[in-house]
Length: 382
Image (cartoon, rainbow, N blue to C red):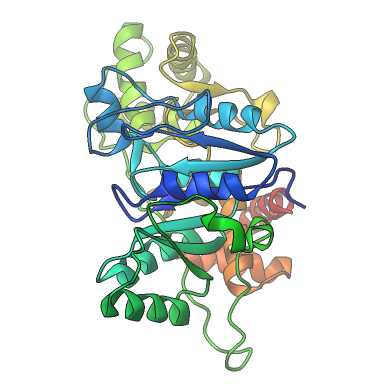
């Protein structure tokens, strides 16, 4: 059962009418609280709004205004602002628009965990735009509750009517319209149903033996090794700079993988305690300077290792395996993949889930170590 009720409104790009939709939803819910991640020169009824005039991705608009967005603070403020209320969050710029270099509106929506309403301008070709956003949302395990066509005229033209009809047939979500004069426009919308929307179950067409649809993972951006100094006698500032490069490329990641990557680049074969100590110290100092987020092993005991990421990287990124071994993939990441597999394929048997994870990563053998590690991830996903 979802602990908090609400909706995240996202668009198909700039000026999709997300804030207009959010206001309409707020008017339709008596105890709603509105929140915008970055309002492009517009305002909403939220003490946490951030208004930027540049018509660009939020990270660029903020930069042009001499500001920066803090993802962790945005999530905290959104949740705190809606305590005991229904949260209506607007994320302008598009679902995959960047709030920072490493964090998108989709990451924000995933952290909130609320159903998504897609706002799209009522223009020719809107069906394709909405389908792309809906697929990207569902690929991240988000429920698409509804589509709102904004800027709906009176009367609409034939293209707009045909686009609405096509959307209604193929997008697997209710389609409603909203004019620029939105007063009372949402009174007839089934918002109560949208608040309860869940990600759709797997398709039941065909036989149970039908091949399952593939899970789309984000690409893995591996750190490109270069010559670095021996950690035992290299000045700490130099080690810190390299560790920052590694975490920038691959975070969130286990601290042990970060240390091992540095050690191998320095020509080391085995990561000894003597070599690890200055690397661990460098990460500690980076955390003290707020350049990385360090989560201690005691706070994630299931991982059995510290976790590191940049402050503007999402806590979990479901990515391809890349050059990692299975036990170098954070358990939180595998647990999110397990949830996606359950949602897409309906798998529930632990052995089937383990095989599905291996297949998604392009692996075959379920070794005893992999069996144990995946079992921890499945427990974490429950």
